[in-house]
Image 1 (cartoon, rainbow over the protein chains, first blue to last red):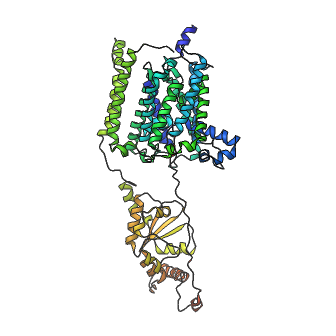
Image 2 (cartoon, rainbow over the protein chains, first blue to last red; image 1 turned 90 degrees about the horizontal axis):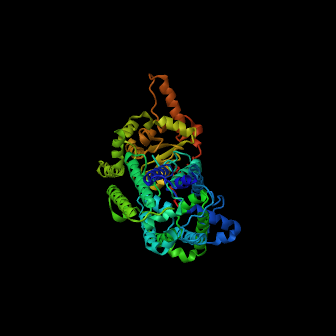
Image 3 (tube, helix red, strand yellow; image 1 turned 180 degrees about the vertical axis):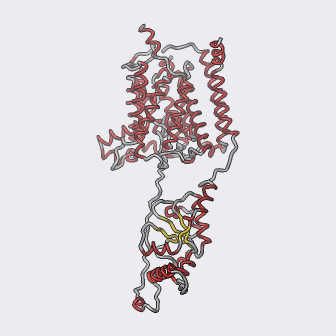
Length: 176
Length: 196
Length: 219
């Protein structure tokens, strides 16, 4: 019985169905707000807020932070932060309905937990850096950019997946 | 007529509420499609699971076709939509760095948020990593500035840069996507199955 | 039996879906293209043209000006020289050639004021009216007869004949009063001769631009 639940936990939606719904959501987002989805923007707001709280003068003097700080509005009070909150809620609902919630570290049986976490941290740092250079991540730049046929969106998408395939060889032990 | 909020049809006070609702739908679909699992996401690079490719392309196609049909019928003005700006080298180099981060960490920011919501510890570490990455970028902004600001082409679309008719482009893009789905299925059958 | 048929169809489900997607994308290519009308539909424009609200008479305008109705915005569509020679009080000069400039848009495309367009006669003001109306600008009117009519009725009203109805006399007295307001002296009223020269203070109107926030960035 327990085994059955364990197997069922990883039965996900048909990818085409998920993709179709995701496309409808993007379409709806553009129809309502004229903009696409995003995710890394919320984390940038988080960093700006933290730096602004800990070292306000430093944040104001920095050429990058100061772009996102205004007197009357907290950097957290942006569209993307609210959207990211929604993502957390929505994923929690979905995970709750299918029983996927729990403190776990997912990794290939060939590697240790420590190694997985170290690579997650390194990957996160790289992704955060890249997302700032390209002004958007896979959802903000690539997915939403592709929906309106933005040149930058297509280039970003090709660069992400292209380099992903190239460098996949070096990280194969982590996954296969 | 559309987009509704920039044209003042829906008051902008609703912006945040709509953001949360859209986020909920986005998070739900991502999680239900399996994007909270890093091994499933990474599968696209090793040929054992092509969910990312399928979801990604299907979503982009549905959204693009939908947007252009709505534009044709007059519900939405494509010219008013936000077009991601093109900074050529920023997009390429940023994309390459993100690609490495993707294979190494197994998430992208949106999916890592989903995984955080269901309690994946690696995802929490990943989000912390992203924040550190943003922090490094901001602190070393003077180093990245020429890359970040350089080779700016404006908010251009493929129609501007390639001079193609958008409708034909969408049609060709659809065929490319379907062919890639077929190929991905063939590749997946050849590879040995991996349970995760 | 039914199950087997369903299974047969389901075996092709991805092909069917792919087919639908290709048909939808092909539909975009094949749909007949039409030039998008910038602005309102021709039928709408026609019905606006016929509508009586299009014109405002000189008498009504004089009344509004005397009462200093703040909701009216006068726009002179003649060229600059004519504008400097003579114009209606507090009018703003937007020559026809500059009508569709960005600076002009904030005066024309707003919902705060009733805009009255005028020229020497109806001719240029009508052109301006059509141009702006096509872009779906609201609350536009044309001064019927233009400045010529203004002279003939308000500034220099024709004396009614003895056998005309009383309304005509009332109208005449209103017009005479109005013309005095606008600075015309009558010989039978010597008190008014020494009327201090009215300095026309140009009303500076700051028109709020219609709310149209640009769509903001993604990630």
